Amino acid sequence: MNAINLENNEIIQVVFFILLAFISMFLVLIMFFYFSRKKIVQIEVDKKNLEIEHQKELLNSVLITQEEERKRIAQDLHDDISSKLNVVSLNSHLLKTPNLNETEQLEITNNIIELTQKALENSRRIAHDLLPPVLEKFGLHAGIEELVEEFNSTKTVKVLYENSIDFESYPIEKHLHIFRILQELLNNSLRHGKATEVSIQFTTFEGRKTCTYIDNGLGFDSSSEENQKGLGMMNIESRINFLGGNFSFTSKPNEGVKMIFNFN
Amino acid sequence: MHHFYELFQFVILSYFFSLLLKTRAQLFTVYVGLIVLPLFLLSRYLINPSLFFEYNLFETYLTTMPLIIYSSMHLYNNLGEKSDFYYSNLGLLFYLFTSTFIFLFYRLLVVFEIEDHINDLMININITLQYIKFAFFFYQWKLIYFNKDERN
Image (cartoon, rainbow over all chains, first blue to last red; front, side, top):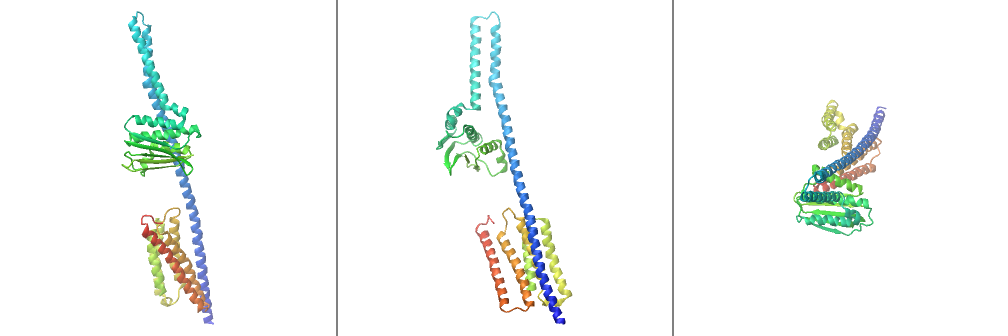
């Protein structure tokens, strides 16, 4: 009787442990899934927040650039045009003074003519800087050619430009973005990178229009966080976003800059 | 002998996980388990030495369950990111899960006195599971050995 009881006891014990093992492993599984789900949702939320933060920064940089551009235009207008028109108005008042002899009159009118011409020239230059007319009239290809020529004419840098894309069917409002990106890149290469050779190439790669930009300048550490937050880079990024494209930017100190971006 | 095997496995793997786990709460659990569990088992045998000569399910359960929990913690820690010893952890978890049931069922068979060829079968299954575990370990070793900077 005792032996049977003992055996029964043992069976119960074994079954109990099997059950216990089942239940606890099941519990571990459930807890694992529960916490995992929570964590995955948290990761997703963090990712989205980061994205939003980035968008905000981009927007901010757009605003700042706009303000700076306004400041620059105001300065240009003030320095180049207002000051000259001021002198013109002074001179015109002078004309009103009685008893002017002929030579004096001639001198003043010549002054006025010269100054108005300069003001006109300056206003044309400012307008040109804001939006190159060639871009609007002859399209992106001609615009870039002109830009490259301008840079080449400074003799400090040699810019090579190759294009195998027909931009004519490309929406005109997107031309400006690409133009500005190249302008910014070229300015950076010259101003910060002290580059002497630059290559710009437009090709179609895997069905997407792709631009490859390479310079031989000083370069910088593109993996450092600080360098990715520059206003210029942010602007380029937001423009590429507008174009619906992707970009990759690589640079190392003393190894120049390489940027590839594509667009639709 | 299985007492020593189980305790040895528990201590070594607890130490292994104490190196892998990150948060304070997890490490605390591992350390507490590492100290309390062996002490508890030891005191149990000191109080009742006859237990030492029996096949002890309670001990099997106590020494593997925490390891399964640690292993799950490690899996949880590395959700969505690259993880150290990912494959060995998976292999370990797999083995612990299955071997625990093998031991328990083996015990059930002994109690019911169904032995002989089923007994051999159980041992063979356990050996196969070990091989699977070592396959995971080997794969992990290969990953670590061949691309040292890119552990998966």
